[in-house]
Length: 403
Ligand SMILES: Nc1nc2c(ncn2[C@@H]2O[C@H](COP(=O)(O)OP(=O)(O)OP(=O)(O)O)[C@@H](O)[C@H]2O)c(=O)[nH]1
Image 1 (tube, rainbow, N blue to C red):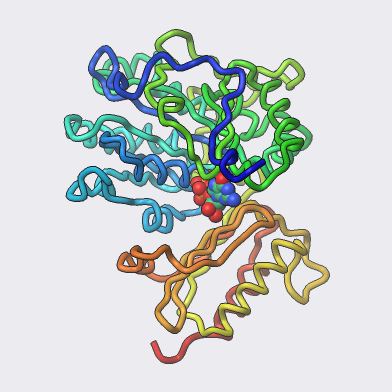
Image 2 (image 1 turned 30 degrees about the vertical axis):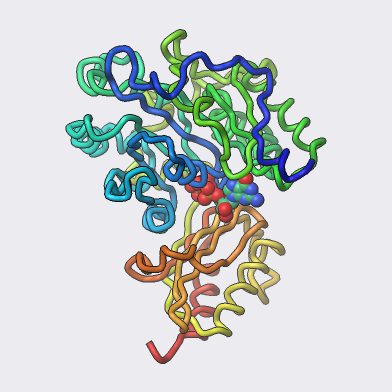
């Protein structure tokens, strides 16, 4: 596939959209809301960033909910001013919800925050709601669709436009397989099942054969969704926004696959598909054995950068702690970070499974600085105190002394 072709999103089994973004304010004059879901690292923030930077003339509010307390890192790399109106800082419209389950955040503090956002209804035309990579979008969608509480309250201002699921073309198949074999129906299956549109992202990193196989699996889970291939979320916005997917049909929250186990109701409690007894939001995710580990990162020397790179490589590629043969297997599904080096250059760490990069913060964004202090976040399995200590030791061996 040539690079030109790669940049053009491919429409599969297309139903040509009849409703364009122009009509997305909805018949009732309510603001459309698009839920963007997708497994850890699939490319949700990249898609949001791309939507915000496009010259479409629409003012878009973003609600972000990040697992592993990385919202501050995202905020530094995602917020952009409107290209059409540089005085309109879209970053003001980004609402970060508490770490944990969006569904619970919305129920509690989130509703108030969204209501406050809606008081500025005239100020924007569309809402994007980016869920965490571990969220089941079904219960979240149901908060904005055909429920009495919503109809009487937020429903006067917002309507659900559609659910867009970003699938990682590199690791999507593996995620679906693991979800099936280990958990019955895990989040990546639920995310695809609930989607109106699936963006098969990162198609630049796989072969067309791999794509066909993954597309086949996605179609088995959700034959009704339109599937588009994308690189870095590049897609004509009319395919994902203003689609009015909920205007014509009733919400289906179940997994569509004929051969998927039908035990979804076992998991459903109350409105939101998980146990509300949990004390902290993190507990919700620990049920699936996935936890996050956060370590603050001091300003590093040049050698420190190298040492951090080596440490991450060993963990991601060898699935073990450097120099420790007995530690249980470590699985890192996602890692992110932002920190400063001795020369004051700010670096961003981005990793999805065994692919990662440590790159200087995008030019022009340095002024935003490092969030409070540098930090590294790993999300995965087996990330215990020994891992924290090992990372901590590497970082502290390479502290820059002149800052
Ligand atoms: N090669 C390639 N890399 C991509 C593409 N889309 C995203 N990435 C990279 O994949 C990594 C993860 O992308 P994000 O947009 O942060 O993913 P996310 O789904 O928001 O991640 P979480 O919110 O942590 O679940 C980043 O390093 C991106 O630059 C793509 O189409 N091709």
